[in-house]
Length: 355
Image: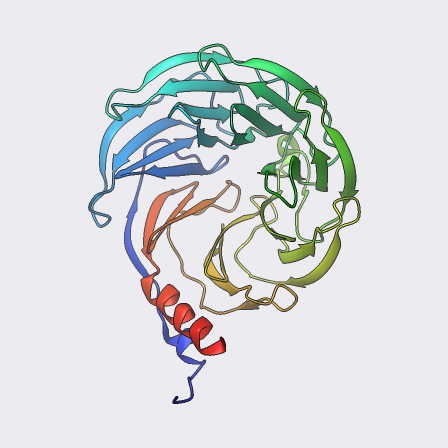
């Protein structure tokens, strides 16, 4: 077999297919995007919008609502789909549930206060079965959403790692190895909760990540900061305004840092976010979009030039979602769609050669 030139990875270029103003993004709060089928669901400080992205070079708006009552211009927005297809959206002013069988005509099922989101922090959602987990500046809350129109709060408590002026992230695991754990990343660090009983979460630990930021009170010119966490197996991948880090979380009571690097895409006020695929982390922040090789969690390496997607803002929360060969990168200035097929293709070849 011929030797494989690993430098070819660096020659794989990402292509910016489109960049649009969604009409609902806000430079202070950013923008969240969720993709299902041919539709991209967007939520930001100015409202909700849905786009037909069947042609990623020409997204077409099919719905917009600038008066949801739940989103705020400073707080992050987050969206998840429930098991029955209900769309849950959280912002700085509350939680909403929507029936979106017809994306051009969503129907509001109801809204409520979460008790943990604040106007300047907003919140992030995770869902497992019929339990909705809400991470906000005021803490962690769990809801039974068996009846989407009438969510029932099961618990509410402080996280110990968040503030009412910063962004939060949450990842919930349920598998044979780590059943019933929630990873709550705030702008003051990481807390791991045992949520095997959603009505009584128990915090197992609180650790400093070294990459999330806490720049201060927005009312005094500061920003929320924070970061984003994704867990796969024994490894937690975390992006923030100060860079990218990995943790061994095989012992949830005593996570161990494996590595920390700079990505140069995160901002102190807006933090950074990531998505994982094929041993790669796609990291987005107010300064751009970059690829990190995480095939060895102990030795992550930035493997691409920084792409200016035009969607990010230095204060707002970013979002990146991978769907096939496309990366949907959202931020305070809108939504960008990036073709990452060449990067994924080269990495797949590299993995095959290594084996």
